[in-house]
Length: 462
Image 1: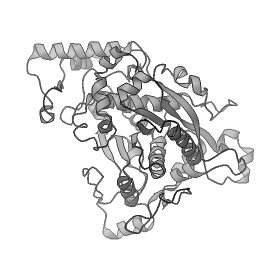
Image 2: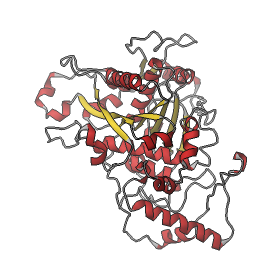
Image 3: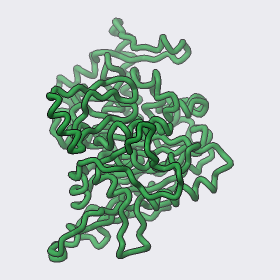
Image 4: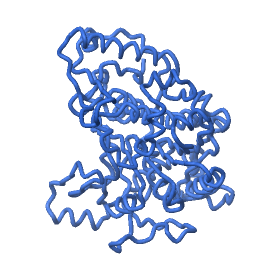
């Protein structure tokens, strides 16, 4: 699920076709919010006054042009002007950080999409981009599948100089697939079992901590890149979640007596280690050790853990959050995932809900990866919305269940669509799954009745 991404650093210079130019001058709708009013009046307003609409749109376009003149404005925490640029009010975010981390399941923030939440989603999306940017993709390089940059310069060299965070740990995922002997004759990149998959970063900037209202810890994961990761993706049958752990709380049977089950390949990448190299721990052990150290270091102040990822990284983010919440039950744990596949069954979802892990899934309706693996039968997602009813006879459903292919959606969903953007002419499978596409759709989404704002072009490639 790794699609090569080249993030736009400067505004596109290509002249828009006349139809697109007209879209800019005459948008379908202009969304405005009035935070001074009660929450139930903060709804979409359609302007019938052409002059007022034009003035409002001009303001939006000017803001967009200003944003495009420098790299990633969402990652400029120390400047009060950059906060204003994003429409981000520091005092509001700080006082309401638990709400934006999903403690109330993002009630009233998704439709229409709250501007502060939009900025936070994009901010975590940039962290995922850094996980991609820092990965060595060149199979001819001796550093293939490793991190290209040291921890202390990773963000700067990925084009994110002012995040307010410092990277504290590089993370690696290891495939548990047993390789046949003939693989020794194949190129080394074919049999790469362990590879750099992401990192841990801790907010260490006082101004950013004040803006966020707590010290935030981020775990960011990239999507699929290596051959063995692709093979793990296809191991789609469910398996019992028997993860070795040192706590008695973790991964106990649920109240109905059946164990939670997750996708075999994702679990393998999370828990496997290289037996031939005792110094190379599993991803699970690495992340537990690092979060334990951070938790001990900053135990006297408010902390939050945000796990984010794209594609395969979204699946690993969900497993990581589930695991760490069992070890640190009092730590607020939130998942912000982009284009993630299904991870587990209904028992797994119930465990996530009961332990208090909050999951916000950013889903593109046109992205096939979000519709696999397995099947979803008559499944009410955690938000109480989006009931999936499979039009299959009961005997087929029974066979699928016996084959352990019945999955469940988890958490709260922000559903977007490539078709709503007037700028995405190419809507093939690859484009719909790109992280860039997801960030573009989040940037442009207004509400279900006004799905896209005309000035959202910041993440399009030139």
